[in-house]
Image 1: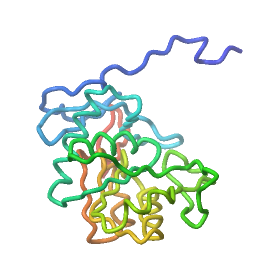
Image 2: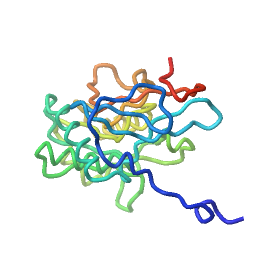
Image 3: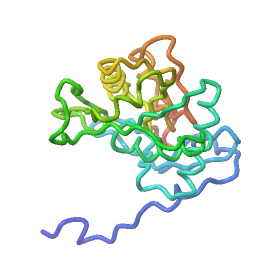
Image 4: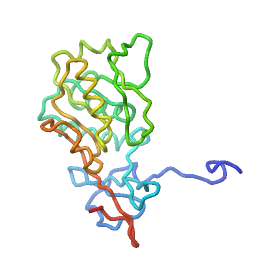
Length: 228
């Protein structure tokens, strides 16, 4: 049997490659979730049903987004982070790296610090921690900080950036890694705050800045509705 990608014509979702004027349509939602940005505009995101359940999540894959979408999200995230006066952004792999770079530019920074999951030969295993995420539940990865980046962290006001906060496990790994490096961030930033599971995981009192929130959605006869 031919693979699905050969036997069927599959088109990329085009509706989430642009930001549209509001207001957001009310539920039920069918194939997309209307994420409302701080300026009232809407980014429609594909719904991804969770296997074996009657629920779904809004999906944001930033390295597949148009530059216009990335620019809009970075602009809003920079505005949300500005009151915390970060002078260095640290980005999580993989999808948080592009957002961290774009947001750092809008904050007037000349660079950012990327974390990684690929161990270079000059890395120190002591500057790494285990990594799990909602999109990579199998684990087995480690999160690394390049030792050559340590001088940039010293004395800096750091904000840690990821594309989305979901369970909070990836962000906690980043915070643990920065703590090994002697750094305590002043804020966390993400484009999407996905459900509320992360709230009981991240340290209390550490400001969390998001561009928009998306709930867990449950399937009913007429479409998907926010759960609870």
